[in-house]
Length: 233
Image (tube, rainbow, N blue to C red):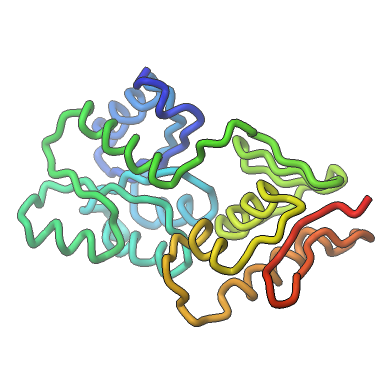
């Protein structure tokens, strides 16, 4: 185990070298990390878009879609999961290119797994999930932070990764007004106002998913202040 820093962490490894990928995922699992694997860029993009991960480890040279293209497309889709790029290209210019494509860290090959693990731990902490509660409940709405399942009155609700993070943050602060600034910083990792309606759009989509076909509204707009999720009883 790696000092307890990786408890409940789930990562995606996108690597076309099957032997290296098998070694890596086995080592991650021995360290207590849930590790999924994709062997090409298109599969990795699909898995990274459809599932929620704490960190992604992406090889730069991949079949079907290269690693930098995968990262760029993930960022375009609003997925800000921390990414560590693996590459045999280790020159400064190569690292800069990788970081500008949306990567968060860059580790040249060959590498020691202990260093890879340490860097993944750091990226996982950056995303930040220090809370002990693994399940949030507001009325008949439930969010499981481990399985990433959301249910209302026992009915499963499918959310996109950003919608899940938004609901998770709202439920963590249930009964309190959550401001736009709080959402920008904690859900979008922005520390400035992008002057767009991105929050309103996502709140609207989330509201339609968790309230459609249900009688009682839970997600409220507090005019001039922000949003609140609360069970009125």
